[in-house]
Image (cartoon, rainbow, N blue to C red; front, side, top):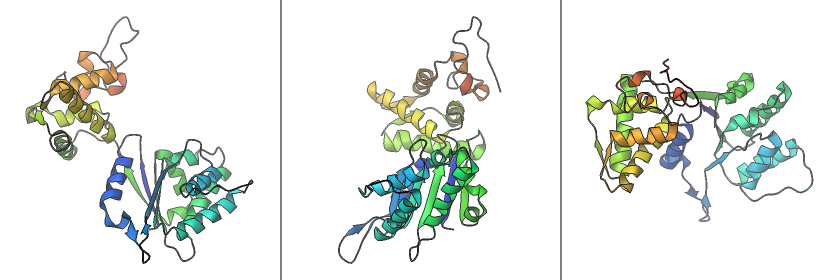
Length: 276
Protein backbone atom coordinates (compact mmCIF):
# COMPACT_ATOMS: atom_id res chain seq x y z
CA UNK A 1 0.00 0.00 0.00
CA UNK A 2 1.43 3.44 -0.91
CA UNK A 3 0.02 5.23 2.19
CA UNK A 4 0.58 4.24 5.83
CA UNK A 5 -1.41 6.03 8.55
CA UNK A 6 -0.04 5.93 12.10
CA UNK A 7 -2.74 7.31 14.40
CA UNK A 8 -2.90 7.79 18.15
CA UNK A 9 -3.46 10.20 21.00
CA UNK A 10 -0.73 12.60 22.09
CA UNK A 11 2.33 10.93 23.66
CA UNK A 12 1.37 7.39 22.66
CA UNK A 13 4.75 6.97 20.99
CA UNK A 14 3.96 7.53 17.31
CA UNK A 15 6.91 9.79 16.56
CA UNK A 16 9.27 7.74 18.74
CA UNK A 17 8.37 4.50 17.00
CA UNK A 18 8.72 6.00 13.54
CA UNK A 19 12.05 7.67 14.32
CA UNK A 20 13.38 4.34 15.51
CA UNK A 21 12.25 2.65 12.30
CA UNK A 22 13.69 5.45 10.19
CA UNK A 23 17.08 5.12 11.91
CA UNK A 24 17.32 1.33 11.81
CA UNK A 25 15.57 0.04 8.66
CA UNK A 26 17.76 -0.18 5.57
CA UNK A 27 14.95 0.99 3.29
CA UNK A 28 15.05 4.47 4.85
CA UNK A 29 18.82 4.98 4.81
CA UNK A 30 20.51 7.35 2.31
CA UNK A 31 22.19 5.84 -0.72
CA UNK A 32 25.04 6.97 -2.97
CA UNK A 33 24.13 7.34 -6.65
CA UNK A 34 26.33 6.62 -9.68
CA UNK A 35 27.84 10.11 -9.46
CA UNK A 36 28.89 9.70 -5.84
CA UNK A 37 26.12 11.98 -4.58
CA UNK A 38 24.31 11.08 -1.36
CA UNK A 39 20.60 10.70 -1.98
CA UNK A 40 18.09 10.69 0.85
CA UNK A 41 15.33 8.15 0.44
CA UNK A 42 13.29 9.69 3.27
CA UNK A 43 11.94 13.19 3.85
CA UNK A 44 10.36 13.55 7.31
CA UNK A 45 8.75 16.79 8.44
CA UNK A 46 6.19 18.23 10.86
CA UNK A 47 3.03 19.98 9.72
CA UNK A 48 2.63 23.39 11.29
CA UNK A 49 -0.44 24.29 13.31
CA UNK A 50 -3.46 25.33 11.20
CA UNK A 51 -1.54 24.37 8.06
CA UNK A 52 -3.51 24.72 4.83
CA UNK A 53 -2.86 22.52 1.76
CA UNK A 54 -1.07 25.46 0.11
CA UNK A 55 1.06 26.14 3.19
CA UNK A 56 1.95 22.46 3.42
CA UNK A 57 3.15 22.43 -0.20
CA UNK A 58 5.28 25.52 0.49
CA UNK A 59 6.73 23.86 3.60
CA UNK A 60 7.72 20.77 1.61
CA UNK A 61 9.43 22.91 -1.03
CA UNK A 62 11.24 24.81 1.71
CA UNK A 63 13.18 21.62 2.53
CA UNK A 64 15.09 22.28 -0.71
CA UNK A 65 15.22 26.07 -0.17
CA UNK A 66 12.74 26.60 -2.97
CA UNK A 67 10.71 29.79 -2.64
CA UNK A 68 8.05 30.52 -5.24
CA UNK A 69 7.61 34.16 -6.23
CA UNK A 70 4.24 35.72 -6.82
CA UNK A 71 1.04 34.13 -5.65
CA UNK A 72 0.83 30.64 -7.14
CA UNK A 73 -2.27 28.64 -6.33
CA UNK A 74 -2.23 25.32 -4.47
CA UNK A 75 -2.42 23.06 -7.58
CA UNK A 76 0.64 24.80 -9.04
CA UNK A 77 2.58 24.32 -5.82
CA UNK A 78 1.65 20.66 -5.57
CA UNK A 79 2.81 20.05 -9.14
CA UNK A 80 6.16 21.55 -8.12
CA UNK A 81 6.25 19.34 -5.03
CA UNK A 82 5.74 16.21 -7.13
CA UNK A 83 8.44 17.23 -9.60
CA UNK A 84 10.90 17.85 -6.77
CA UNK A 85 10.11 14.58 -4.99
CA UNK A 86 10.98 12.71 -8.15
CA UNK A 87 14.00 14.92 -8.94
CA UNK A 88 15.37 14.49 -5.40
CA UNK A 89 14.62 10.75 -5.60
CA UNK A 90 12.60 10.75 -2.39
CA UNK A 91 10.95 7.35 -1.96
CA UNK A 92 9.31 7.97 1.43
CA UNK A 93 7.60 11.18 2.57
CA UNK A 94 6.64 11.32 6.24
CA UNK A 95 4.20 14.01 7.35
CA UNK A 96 3.87 14.20 11.15
CA UNK A 97 1.13 16.00 13.12
CA UNK A 98 -1.03 15.77 10.01
CA UNK A 99 -4.18 16.55 11.99
CA UNK A 100 -3.14 20.21 11.63
CA UNK A 101 -3.89 20.00 7.92
CA UNK A 102 -7.33 18.46 8.44
CA UNK A 103 -8.74 21.32 10.50
CA UNK A 104 -10.71 22.74 7.60
CA UNK A 105 -14.20 23.60 8.74
CA UNK A 106 -15.87 22.38 5.55
CA UNK A 107 -15.99 19.10 3.65
CA UNK A 108 -14.57 20.96 0.66
CA UNK A 109 -11.48 22.06 2.59
CA UNK A 110 -10.81 18.54 3.83
CA UNK A 111 -11.49 17.16 0.36
CA UNK A 112 -8.77 19.37 -1.10
CA UNK A 113 -6.30 17.96 1.40
CA UNK A 114 -7.34 14.42 0.52
CA UNK A 115 -6.89 15.12 -3.18
CA UNK A 116 -3.41 16.60 -2.64
CA UNK A 117 -2.31 13.64 -0.54
CA UNK A 118 -3.73 11.12 -3.00
CA UNK A 119 -1.96 12.85 -5.89
CA UNK A 120 1.44 12.26 -4.25
CA UNK A 121 1.01 8.53 -4.76
CA UNK A 122 0.32 9.07 -8.47
CA UNK A 123 3.56 10.68 -9.65
CA UNK A 124 4.32 9.49 -13.16
CA UNK A 125 7.31 7.18 -13.16
CA UNK A 126 8.00 7.55 -9.43
CA UNK A 127 6.86 5.10 -6.67
CA UNK A 128 6.51 7.46 -3.70
CA UNK A 129 5.31 5.97 -0.42
CA UNK A 130 3.55 8.31 2.00
CA UNK A 131 3.62 7.94 5.79
CA UNK A 132 1.04 10.07 7.61
CA UNK A 133 1.08 10.27 11.41
CA UNK A 134 -0.91 12.29 13.89
CA UNK A 135 -3.72 12.41 16.39
CA UNK A 136 -7.17 10.89 15.73
CA UNK A 137 -8.21 13.87 13.59
CA UNK A 138 -6.08 12.30 10.85
CA UNK A 139 -8.85 9.72 10.41
CA UNK A 140 -10.65 12.37 8.32
CA UNK A 141 -8.35 11.34 5.50
CA UNK A 142 -9.72 7.82 5.53
CA UNK A 143 -13.25 9.04 4.86
CA UNK A 144 -12.22 9.30 1.23
CA UNK A 145 -12.75 5.95 -0.49
CA UNK A 146 -9.93 6.64 -2.94
CA UNK A 147 -7.49 7.28 -0.09
CA UNK A 148 -8.74 4.31 1.95
CA UNK A 149 -8.22 1.98 -1.02
CA UNK A 150 -4.56 3.01 -1.12
CA UNK A 151 -3.89 2.95 2.61
CA UNK A 152 -3.12 0.89 5.66
CA UNK A 153 -3.75 2.22 9.16
CA UNK A 154 -2.02 1.48 12.45
CA UNK A 155 -3.64 2.80 15.64
CA UNK A 156 -1.54 3.23 18.80
CA UNK A 157 -3.81 3.03 21.81
CA UNK A 158 -3.10 4.08 25.37
CA UNK A 159 -1.41 1.36 27.40
CA UNK A 160 -3.32 -0.59 30.03
CA UNK A 161 -2.04 -2.56 33.00
CA UNK A 162 -2.05 -6.06 31.56
CA UNK A 163 0.54 -8.83 31.71
CA UNK A 164 2.01 -8.40 28.22
CA UNK A 165 2.25 -4.60 28.50
CA UNK A 166 3.74 -4.75 31.99
CA UNK A 167 6.39 -7.18 30.76
CA UNK A 168 7.23 -4.92 27.81
CA UNK A 169 7.47 -1.79 29.98
CA UNK A 170 9.72 -3.63 32.43
CA UNK A 171 12.18 -4.10 29.56
CA UNK A 172 11.81 -0.47 28.48
CA UNK A 173 12.48 0.88 31.99
CA UNK A 174 15.47 -1.44 32.43
CA UNK A 175 16.90 -0.41 29.06
CA UNK A 176 16.66 3.31 29.90
CA UNK A 177 18.10 2.97 33.41
CA UNK A 178 20.77 0.33 32.80
CA UNK A 179 21.74 0.53 29.14
CA UNK A 180 21.25 4.22 28.43
CA UNK A 181 22.02 5.86 31.78
CA UNK A 182 24.48 3.23 33.09
CA UNK A 183 22.62 3.01 36.40
CA UNK A 184 20.85 0.26 38.32
CA UNK A 185 17.19 -0.23 39.22
CA UNK A 186 16.79 -0.42 43.00
CA UNK A 187 13.40 -2.12 43.05
CA UNK A 188 12.08 -5.66 42.91
CA UNK A 189 9.21 -7.34 41.05
CA UNK A 190 7.13 -7.03 44.22
CA UNK A 191 7.25 -3.24 43.86
CA UNK A 192 5.32 -3.56 40.56
CA UNK A 193 7.14 -0.56 39.09
CA UNK A 194 6.20 -1.22 35.42
CA UNK A 195 2.49 -1.21 36.29
CA UNK A 196 2.89 1.91 38.41
CA UNK A 197 4.70 3.58 35.51
CA UNK A 198 1.84 2.81 33.13
CA UNK A 199 -0.64 4.39 35.56
CA UNK A 200 1.66 7.36 36.24
CA UNK A 201 1.98 8.00 32.52
CA UNK A 202 -1.76 7.78 31.95
CA UNK A 203 -1.06 5.00 29.47
CA UNK A 204 1.12 7.27 27.31
CA UNK A 205 4.28 5.52 26.15
CA UNK A 206 6.26 8.71 25.50
CA UNK A 207 5.34 10.09 28.95
CA UNK A 208 6.48 6.84 30.58
CA UNK A 209 9.87 7.20 28.91
CA UNK A 210 10.17 10.81 30.14
CA UNK A 211 9.34 9.78 33.72
CA UNK A 212 12.07 7.15 33.76
CA UNK A 213 14.61 9.46 32.14
CA UNK A 214 13.92 12.25 34.62
CA UNK A 215 14.28 9.80 37.50
CA UNK A 216 17.70 8.85 36.08
CA UNK A 217 18.72 12.51 35.90
CA UNK A 218 17.65 12.96 39.52
CA UNK A 219 19.84 10.06 40.64
CA UNK A 220 22.80 11.34 38.61
CA UNK A 221 22.40 14.87 39.99
CA UNK A 222 22.61 13.43 43.49
CA UNK A 223 25.69 11.36 42.67
CA UNK A 224 23.98 7.99 42.97
CA UNK A 225 24.36 4.96 40.71
CA UNK A 226 20.88 3.58 41.43
CA UNK A 227 17.38 4.76 40.57
CA UNK A 228 14.83 4.19 43.31
CA UNK A 229 11.09 4.18 43.74
CA UNK A 230 11.51 7.45 45.63
CA UNK A 231 13.06 9.03 42.52
CA UNK A 232 10.01 8.09 40.46
CA UNK A 233 7.69 9.35 43.21
CA UNK A 234 9.52 12.68 43.38
CA UNK A 235 9.39 13.15 39.60
CA UNK A 236 5.68 12.35 39.51
CA UNK A 237 4.98 14.77 42.37
CA UNK A 238 6.95 17.55 40.65
CA UNK A 239 4.99 17.01 37.44
CA UNK A 240 1.54 16.67 38.98
CA UNK A 241 1.56 18.52 42.34
CA UNK A 242 -0.35 15.58 43.81
CA UNK A 243 -1.04 14.49 47.35
CA UNK A 244 0.80 11.41 48.63
CA UNK A 245 -2.31 9.26 48.31
CA UNK A 246 -2.60 10.19 44.62
CA UNK A 247 0.97 9.24 43.75
CA UNK A 248 1.14 5.77 42.14
CA UNK A 249 4.67 5.32 43.48
CA UNK A 250 3.75 5.93 47.13
CA UNK A 251 0.30 4.40 47.54
CA UNK A 252 -0.52 0.70 47.76
CA UNK A 253 -3.75 1.32 45.85
CA UNK A 254 -1.86 2.59 42.80
CA UNK A 255 -4.19 0.98 40.25
CA UNK A 256 -6.96 3.38 41.34
CA UNK A 257 -4.91 6.52 40.77
CA UNK A 258 -6.19 8.80 38.00
CA UNK A 259 -3.45 11.16 36.85
CA UNK A 260 -5.97 13.73 35.62
CA UNK A 261 -7.29 14.09 39.19
CA UNK A 262 -3.89 14.67 40.79
CA UNK A 263 -4.47 18.43 41.21
CA UNK A 264 -8.12 18.17 42.20
CA UNK A 265 -7.28 19.11 45.79
CA UNK A 266 -5.86 22.51 44.86
CA UNK A 267 -8.26 25.27 45.87
CA UNK A 268 -10.54 22.85 47.73
CA UNK A 269 -11.29 23.12 51.41
CA UNK A 270 -11.69 19.39 51.70
CA UNK A 271 -9.64 16.77 49.95
CA UNK A 272 -11.31 13.63 48.69
CA UNK A 273 -9.72 10.80 46.73
CA UNK A 274 -11.27 10.34 43.30
CA UNK A 275 -11.30 7.02 41.55
CA UNK A 276 -12.27 5.69 38.13
